[in-house]
Length: 583
Picture (cartoon, helix red, strand yellow):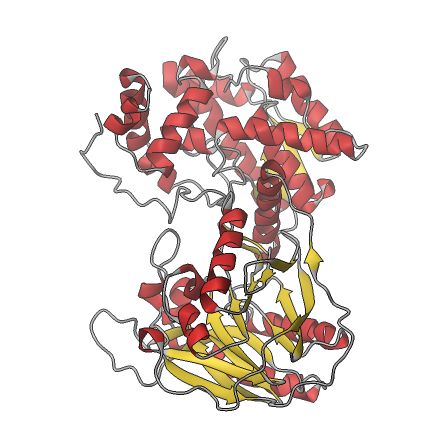
C-alpha cells in the first residue's frame, strides 16, 4: 500500500493576529518538512484564531483573512516549503450565496485551504455548523456544500472541519462513498471536563463509519474563557489508536501511515447529504518504499484533577499573555479559594509576576493572616499587608452601617484597594470566586467580585478542595514544597466579615450544595426532579431561589476559564428579569 508521512501541528493561535499566526504556520511547517512530512495540517481557523465571534461579520476582517491565506501560500514557496501540501484553517466568504433574511451578512465561512507550490489548490467550508453551548455558528457562517478530497502520493485524503465529525451524516459517510484512504479533520474544539474520553470514542466511531484511517487534529491554548487541550488523535479503520498527542502542549505529531491506493478514476458527482465532490490531484504516484520510522505513540494521559488544573493554568496564561499583561494581583485571605487561585497564577505566569495583598479587618483571624503569609513563603510570590481597619472605621463613623451592609463594606474596601494598586502598578486583578459562590450569589459586587479574570469561576467548591490537594500532592511527588498551606485546606470556609462567621451559616454544606447545583445549573433539572433524586425539598427550593436571584451578579462577574459543559456565561443564558421560580 502507498505510504504517507502525516504531520499534525496542534499549536496555539491568537484571534486577530493574522501576521503572528501566519508566522507560526511557517515555523511549524518548516519543522514538519525537516521531519520528512508529506502532508501537513494546522487547526481550524488557524490564521484568524478561534472563535472570532462578530469579527466574522466585519467585511474588512474577512478580506484580511482571505489575503493572508494567499500571502501565506506564496511565503511558504518563497521559503522553500512549497512542495509539501499544507492544510490550514481561515475565514472565508461564499461568493455564490445570495443574501437573504436570517443569513449572516457577507456570507462568511469557517473554511480551510490546501496550499501547495505558492498557490491555493482547494478551499472548503465547514458543512455542519454547531449552534449549542458556546457555539453560535449559524449566526456567523454559511455552511459548505462540498466533499473536498485531495490526492497526495497516490492516496485520496478526505477533508473535514470539527463539527463535521461531531454530527451524524455529511462528510464522514461521504468519505467512505468516495473511497478515501484517510479522513483528516482539523478542529478547534474547546476543552471540557471528561471530553478527552468522549473525543476518543467519537473518532473511533467515525473511522469505522468512514471506512478509513481518521486523523483528528486539535488546537491548543486559550481564548477568553475557552481552553483548547490538544490531544490530537489518529486511529485506524477498526478504531485502534495509532497515535495520540500530549494534552495542553504545543506539539507536532508525525506519523508514517500505510493507506489504500486511490482508485484510478477520481471520484465525482454528488454524494451523501447532497455534497458535491471537489477532487484535486496534487501528486498521483505513490512514493518509493521507505523505512517507516515515525510510529506515533501515545503521550501519557492525565488524571481528572491534573487535567482540570492544567486547563486552569493554560486559560489564565493565555488570557494574560494575549492581552499584554505580565503580572497579576490577588487579595490573599488565607482561605482556600485565594490560595488555589494564587497557586494557579504562580504556575501560569511565574511566582515573580504574582503579587498578593493581605487586607485584614477587625474580624480577620490570626490563623488566616498567618496562612496568607505562609502561602506567599511557600510559593515565592510578592507579598504585602495593607490593613483596611482605618478605612473601615471612617466609613462606619460616617454611615453607621449594620448587618449585611457592614459585611459587604469590608469586601468593597478590599476591592477598591486592589483596583487602586492595579491602576498604580499595572497588574491585572484576579477574582477568586468559585462556581458554588457565583451560583448562589455568595459574593459581593465591587468587592471580592472585582477583577479582570476569574481563574476558578467554573470550579465548584468541593472541586476547589480536590484541586488544592492534588496540587500539593503533585509538588510532594516532585520533591517540591506544596504551595497551599494545609490549614487553608482543612479549616471551615469563612468570609470572616463578622465574628465567628462560617459559610455554613448562610449556605448548605458544600457537598450538598454542589450536588444540587450540578443538577440545576449544569443539568437544567427543575425542583421536582432534584427533590425526586433524594434532596430535601426546603433546601432545594432555597438553593434554587438563591441561584435565580443572583443572575444580575453573575452578569457583572469577570470572564474565567470554562472547564464544565455548562459554565456561567455563553453556555447558560437566562433572563435577569424573570418571575419564574422553581418549586
